[in-house]
Length: 298
Image (cartoon, rainbow, N blue to C red; front, top):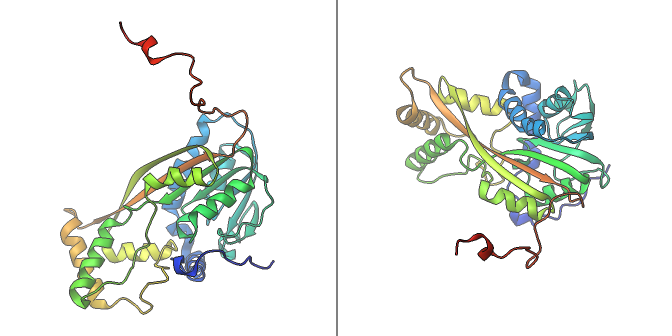
């Protein structure tokens, strides 16, 4: 299938999608089960929202699901009769027990009103046009269909970002972007509304993992397929002096009594429904049946 022509202004392309795919492919081939913990944990927390929803989701989509954590949870909870897994990397789908489609999350190939449920776990933060991606998701949902999403938030990896920034600034006199810009939770609800999704709900939480050394964290990020894919990234390897200094700063500032260091991941959760007549709607202006004075003491 021929890939659609991108409508994104070249000046607004933040991520090299070919590099994103390469990183994911490498992660799948190295030892993905070893590095999928965070994705599975977030998938579990995201799908817990389905426990409070009395709704029959016949066909669900796991969008950019990598190891398929969202699909596994939906099936385990018996919240959908069928799940289709997708990823931009064939290797991530090779052992899928469910139907699987290789695709780019920026160009969804599905017909309008195909799915009852779409879930995406830690994938959409790599899209160059998040509003456009959400609009496409809304287009694939049937009326009264549900979207559940989880993205890395802007406060993710603040410890690593600050130490790399200071180390490179001190040693090289300037900095190259090394950690992707993430979504702000205050923007997430507006993005859902802009995409045409109704009843938007967003919330956030922090997940802190501990590592033996900053280099162990950097190695794990590569194993997760989350290495730097910014178009403006420095193309050659980060110098040893910069990495060593960043590691020293990390340990000095954040190391615990046992020498371990924390890495904080902010997760932004997004929920929105494809509009349907059965959904609760805000009252029209001037349609109230009571005046405020009716509820005040006289």
